[in-house]
Image 1 (tube, rainbow, N blue to C red):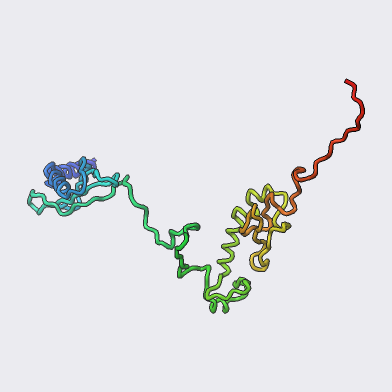
Image 2: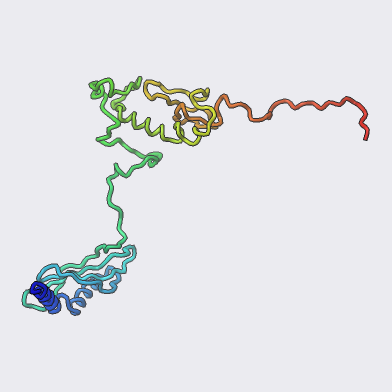
Length: 255
């Protein structure tokens, strides 16, 4: 029971101390508001509260009416010297509230770029740490299992095994992969189509390029992909075939 009384006494003492603190009075609120208004950067709304930031300083918050800054708040830091009730202003600022409209977190350019962002005339050099590429001299020192067997590649940089594997993974899951909707509904598949030109199997496996302008023309397609424009697709009707001739046996028909 004595512990409860002590707690109540401390709480009462804190309330009395706050009530007598010149930094938390109506006069301090007026000083803080005048400082924000004098700044002249936007409307100043209702007083939202005050927080003691030390024995001789406090922060007052006001609603901000500033275009484009919904949910932001004006803050004014006030202070007074020990033993004095004269309130002065240390700082005024516009800060985001808990529901403030904020710009998204900054993301480095290299992490913002997405497939399809590159336009005509744009320049997009590879990242210095791009694991899809390696210097040709360094690749020559790599073991066979980690070296893609890409023929006739005479470039300063070479495609790494990781770069190739990532590409193959994307292609398998693309609209021209073996599990796409077209492939699931196709009766015939690219592996047996004359329009499908296979790429080197020892490099990319079961992938090739479609040459049918009415199908996946120019796209890399899996041999298990398929569509209704396969070279062996049978005619669906008799369009284009000679029509049968009418025959009249000239016999008399009685009505």
